[in-house]
Image (cartoon, rainbow, N blue to C red; front, side):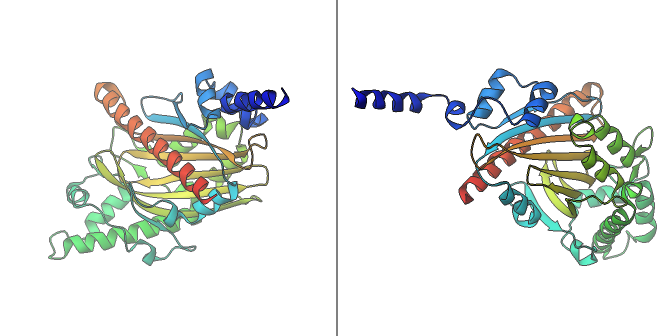
Length: 343
């Protein structure tokens, strides 16, 4: 009889929901508060998370210029493994849609940008670009310099233009590290100038993840490099990545806040050659002792862009949303596999 009871107990355990076997049905207190009150997870989304699946969710945003998506998954591996992987960004973000990833030295060197290549289509667009009418995202001042400093009729015009753009990227990184957001671009490719620093400030002010739950992280992002906070480290990197119909050259500032209780990694978009004015990917790593030695991985991606309003904008917005959501799901699943396989 005793043996039968034991067998029945084991059978019940084997068929019990995963959340019952690996912990409760609530998250650690701060994460539970955010997911319940701010995100408002549905019962189905909650069940999927506790089964170990990845979920995504569109978040409220100004649809005329912003796309916002949340992703979350449980990763059964130590937080430290993920943080170390991000610090080695060249190895971590390679393959698939990441064509080239290069960490920028501190201080930056011109050599850091030697591998930067502008697609031929973008190079041809730059030849025709005028302030207020340009397919490539480039600040008004930089565009005027390009036409005055590069001889587009010379036999080596393409090589000269490429070298000039590498130098420009280097100068942009140096300027940001010295002056912060005040050195970010001003675009004049629409009916009004777009100040990247202002767009970033407004966007992050409307993010409860930063304004309510992580105010020090927002302050660090906005006031860098004037502010210094214990536990914060950062670096810059540039990347060529596939997105939508065109490859993108982008420069990001990665900020890491690492404590024994949790960790936050913010990737701030400083420049993108297409689609985006500004953006941020915020990743929270939250341990949960009730489930073991792993961590909850919650990411929020927000970006601002032109061309998202009106009838055509709705089509473009849907495409951008789809690409961002696909990228988040792919990244979460690949990260989960990589971290857990190493574990």
